[in-house]
Image (cartoon, rainbow, N blue to C red; front, side, top):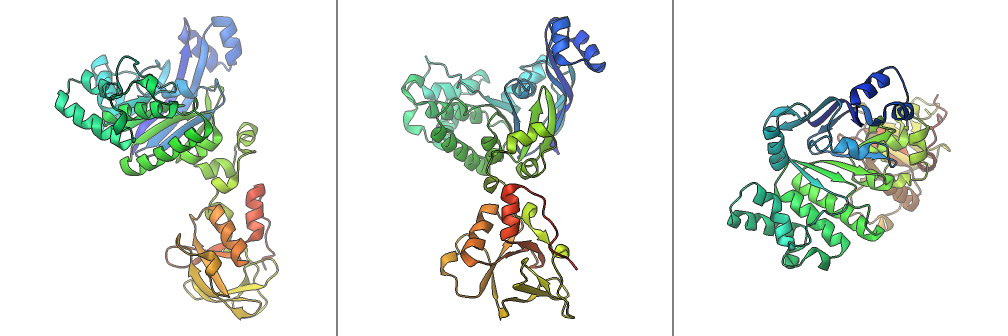
Length: 402
């Protein structure tokens, strides 16, 4: 069930949003609307559902509307048309119509925000900065001290609690902002380009820390970024925005494999597919593999026909050979030493195995990699041809199915 839902959201800044909406409905472009009415259309017709535990990344160029849309979730931006629903205590609360008291409750109990530029109060020490939201809620000092100490420990700043923001590096200050957001124990975290002002190495380190925290805390996160590598690394769901519209929604793999238009294609053109693609988008299905001209039901696992496979009635490998010699199958595990495998060993992989791993298996064994489901049935194969087509992001031609 969605925790955050955007329904046909328009966000318009200016003196007369209603006039701008009327022009939008007539198909007038945003630039013309601004010239005519002095209203700026920041978001138009945005619809999106964010499920519990997702990291949804709003991605786009500067001015695409991603931060404007994010700030609708906690009411920092007024929605000109449409609805924003936030699920809290088994109720869907419409942020666009709820009264101030309910919105205040959402901000203190359900939603926390991490800002791009830290937004720390320089006159308060680190402990006091993290405790600020708890103070506003009226929590007794002993209880909030316990919570703050735990959150600072979580972000590895326990020894810095008495320091002031000016005494911390940029990365450490951002971790203070994250601890402050976590202190309220809100289910929803809004993160507005929180790492963009940091050096690349620090940014990558904090991305890793966020992934680790998410594995432990299972928050629902809406994250704004203009960095595609960051979006692909963090996001379980990505929404690409252009000129206020959401133009594509999908998993990182879907975005990279199937960009819907030239705008998205330009975004993904320069990224490294090894970081994103998995066997699900690489494999050549069994029914596309070349059948041998015999009565044994055998088919080739590679274009040259050196590796031959026969399945039993359940679709499991009955016999696999390479150049006529039987191969032993072993399922890939993270602790396998691929360089120490005995001769004539073929490694199989699960459908969610990353492309980078399959590339390593193929390189070290010199063999294609059968892709198996949870019942050890063969779904397809990834070999050298599929890997190169994945890197080049080309469509797979048929391997001479007969």
